[in-house]
Length: 95
Image 1: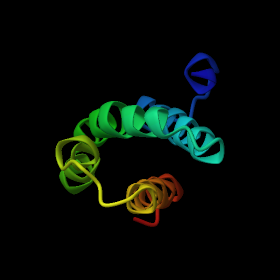
Image 2 (image 1 turned 135 degrees about the horizontal axis):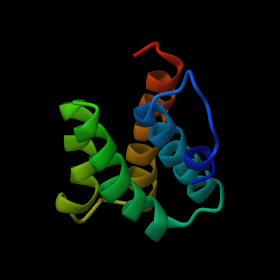
Image 3 (image 1 turned 120 degrees about the horizontal axis):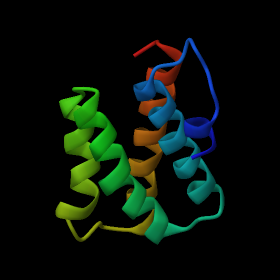
């Protein structure tokens, strides 16, 4: 939420929200907080992706919860890592 309170003239609200979502995901991933990862991916990433009209990303974020159970913890983390990577590429403008 820090970015949302900072004034930046060249940054759009969509970009600020992306940075906030990505920071939350990265923190949860570093601390291995699986519940937070699931919540952020399903709620925040899915919401952002819909707002940004990135339907494939929104669908993948939805699958985190709706396509249960995951075969293993490592499979779940692999999906989350892919989502984080995609968001990082979007943030950098290369995706």
